[in-house]
Length: 288
Image (cartoon, rainbow, N blue to C red; front, top):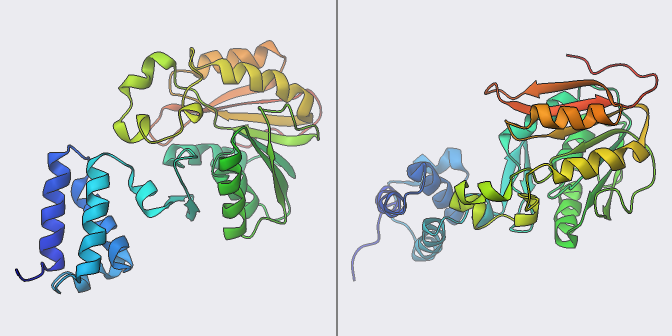
């Protein structure tokens, strides 16, 4: 029987496996998965690397590396993803929170709102983050997927906002009638023709209904913008995340229904990322 590998040796072997599978950032992923398999916080990992790896830890690590080599996302393997400084539960039933969606959060926090609706809430990361940042606000998250709503409810409890948010199974606003001064959404905006260009982590493992409308990528915006007219208070704001080439088209959809002060907000990479417009009526405009 051979001697057990040290942590450093196990990491090196795992990185080679992931590199052979064309996994991006293989060394980083190997470290994250080794920390998870070891039950060690990532910042303490270096202290344990010279030590032999216990058999149970090595077995868990090997299994995780095998799954990652099949391009299963790290977030699915460890069950969480960080978003706006908080850790959210994720699963194959919800879209992974992404850094670019933080542009939607930053833009929303520059508005004055007390009642927020998150359409297609998924993990709940958007509405939960907004409520955590705005302790006097209340909110609703709607989603067609009952499994996604279960994940969102657990995340609301994790972040202590469950007393200020409710989750509703709804096809956009079909089952939601109360008025809101802010409606936000990160809808499926990838055109069906673009799906094959996505990474395997996204294409194979994330819920397809959260990625594409199976059409031109604008169908969800047409539905949301039309329905939001019935759910926005006078002066309220509709705000949506977009793909980087959709700013002009989504802006035109908002102007076509007489939303005012329509604007496009870029993300940190300078790509169009958020479009918002306001319902006719008195309200303080979004602060820049």
